[in-house]
Length: 449
Image 1 (cartoon, rainbow, N blue to C red):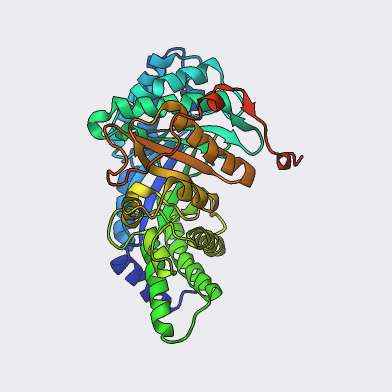
Image 2 (spheres, rainbow, N blue to C red):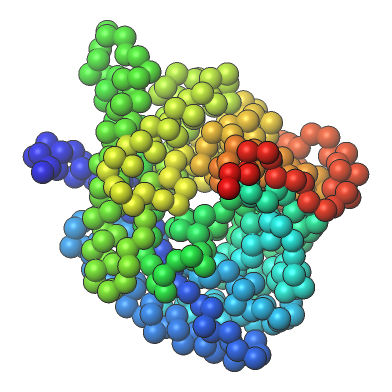
């Protein structure tokens, strides 16, 4: 039973510390929507989403109002569209993307994810058509996000797909140059992509999931920062140890996770669908007091990227997972600490003042929950160099048996010295590496059966 001080503490977290349910994501299986033409498939997709998600947003708003806990985003994730559109050409996939966009708008969700494919071991002709459609599909829709899994610990890295990823990211940025290359921000490349992640742009409804499932993403970097600041203030002249600070993170995470599970189960019950997981990920926003970067400062590094930054992130990620797992038997998705450079004011400032470089950021992704997330690079970086950066990130996930991803934004017309643009060294020196193609074999520890 919750004690009164825990209830009061949770209320304060909501009112003063930016605690919210960051996203409630409805996962829908669309495999039964496949028809003989893209147009007929599009009709079935729109009809199914309208039928199953018509009450989704009003239900979320009603539950949020009843409990006084904001639900910031209401989203949908669908079965990877490369499976739903099997046999279609690139134009057919653009047709499906536009149908998904119309359906998302009709039911009032913020974003729809799942314009996706799984190609870690090889590509079909359908997969190639899907990849060819990505730039146009994202440029001509407003609410669609795309992702692709090109690597896994069990299968290795699909180097043929990797080469296409560099060109795709480059094309996405160029086709949306009038929006600062924002099309690239709606596309993420994965290793070990989970099928129950509620956060965009990488949310999909995995083929192993039920017909409809509700997953919740709860974020609380501001809550963690305030809890640590209070603990340090209360200690006064007492010298705290890192294990005491980790315990404080665990306890704050526990309360955050309980809030997320409460909201998720209530929405799930009201809609009459299965409840999936709570993803407790510290996903920051540009809002003051909602920064993962602030936690680095509180824990003793005066410049994010300074020695010690990776160790702090490792401890933070571990403590968040421990607190979440203790609070709920259904923790899933990514669950840990995100370091999206363009979505965290202090991380962005660290890039701006030169304390955080691309190489240090890559090192830190070894121990975070996502990878190179929302990283803006100079717009003139070539496609092969972009692919090689992605390759390095994929290798970290494959070897470490963890989910990792790359969401790179080559900002058109921007270069080194512009705010939030991470300089890329040795540009143009990886083309021979990318040209090999084939598949980078899985590591030896992948053979478990």
